[in-house]
Image (cartoon, rainbow, N blue to C red; front, side, top):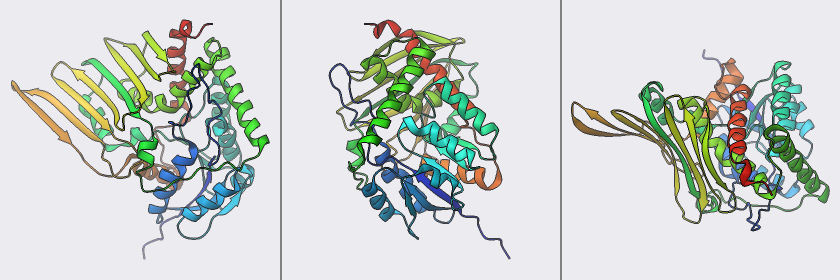
Length: 394
């Protein structure tokens, strides 16, 4: 008789009412274009976990907004989850195996350490941390815990990306590479996702002040102490953009090409917001370009060139389910130009990522997106901000 499939019980710590505390730049540019934790939970995590009901079960929800809790609970398939405002209650519950930390960046490390201290596996949305102090705290806490951490770099679990890394075949032959993420505001895609997410404002003034204080602390630690960059409205926004949007692209770059040696030059303008960075690798350069505008398109790709081959991984918005990630190979085959478009699967990166998470929890299978791996994003963020320091000096 076949054994029953183990159901992994999930507790979600969200932030379904508050948007990030950093809402200002020189031109009062708002953060509304960015994906708030509320939208990510309602558009991606809860629906995907519902689809995985043979492997996962949402048993607990945590948020500072009672209205958000009730709304998100209504979206959960099966038995109604328990609801709480207290993250410690969720993390200590015997009804939770893995804690999804999908709230504001300011709470990623505090809640991940709380989960680890109670022996839980912590699934942390990117960015994992935004300064050395917090990253080292997480490393130390994980080392003492039976729980493990998986960082949610979903693009790196896309089948097309994994195949592209194989197609590239190592960096020895690389002559040039480009990493691009130029996208329209996420509301274009979220509003057409069919998930109908809602925002709520019924959180206390104390909770709002706590978020603001934590945001200021992260900026001081990451910019001033770690990178020696002055903390201004512009530098704080740029730092946060690297964490929220840049972590998607730079982690893909790291896995495909390794770590850059240094930054050759950069233009960082969070008020547009558009930014460009030229990295030096051993034997070749890499151009990283990113920005957000009002065109409803999603142009995110990694493109790697060798003498006789060009490999492109093209991503679409993850907030409309089922849009494939593709690989295009353009090459010289016996003197002929050959172009191949490869779409191996319609399974989205979040689904593929959850399969790896399930194997981590039930089998102890190692994952590649670890705390130690994510620390490398911080190193690249610092490279960029240090290279652009003079752009933020008053």
